[in-house]
Amino acid sequence: MNAAGRERTGVNAPGRGSALAGRRVLVTGARGTFGQHLGAALTAAGAHVVGLDLHADPDVTPPVLGVDLTDPAATPPAVAAAVDRLGGLDLLVNNAGVGGPAPAELPPDEVVRRQIEVNLLAAWRTTAAAMPALEAARGRVIFVASRMAVLPLPLAAAYGVSKRALVAYADALRHEVGTHVGVSVVYPSMVASPIHDSTVAAGLSLSGVSRPEPVEGVVAAILRAATARRAPRDVATTRRGRIELALARHAPALADRMVRRTVATRLAAGDLDGAALAEGMVRRHRQDRR
Image (cartoon, rainbow, N blue to C red; front, top):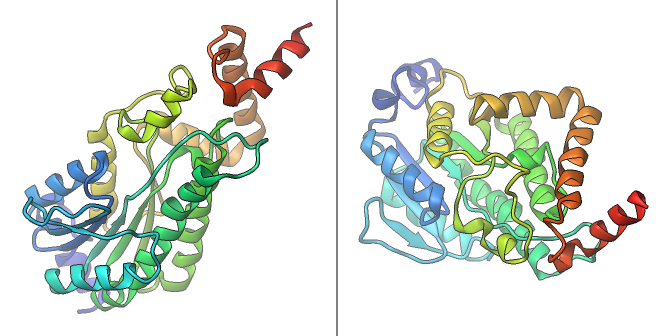
């Protein structure tokens, strides 16, 4: 089928339900907060969905196959099994991700390595394994990044670095395969989910720094990217998100000042006094105020 035909009948067609009906979709991180909601929404729209996650759950709808996407040897056969089960592949959603506190002033540790492995390299491996099927179907790949890819916050360097690198990978991929496979990046802000648990436990809650948004808005943004007539390059999940993306891209110095001011307010209020990982920031802030 040529590209024009796929725009009329495939994931590119207007009308979200009709566009997704019958489409073959692979979702990574399928048992996470986004993954579960996305799988349900895609299934309700008539898509055929298979998920990948660290722990298998083949009896649910949609079924989830188990694989460690940080394992270079395990990923290709898992993707092949999912594609075989679907009978091809029209859409890949790279949704798997992990978070955790990681101050940039401290040496990288296992938390940093894990985030780069899962947030960047797992998506890279999965996409590479799925590319032949996506190209054959003139399909699409969607990367779930983060607003922190363009608007980084302190004390979460690994997450911001891994998500910014994911965007850079998506940009390179678009140049290579964009004539045959659509490539989009979605940028959620903070959504209440277990991904933040380790950060909260370390006393580094994003409360007051990043505005929460509902998971339904993130899912809706992914579906918009999947069903748009042409694959959009960047997709914000809220109006505020669109403003923040534009600000970070076109006025980065102003964006930096806004982040520093917000963080300074939290430091002055003592919000980070009990966080060992923020000790350096707290000490420098108090020195400046003397």
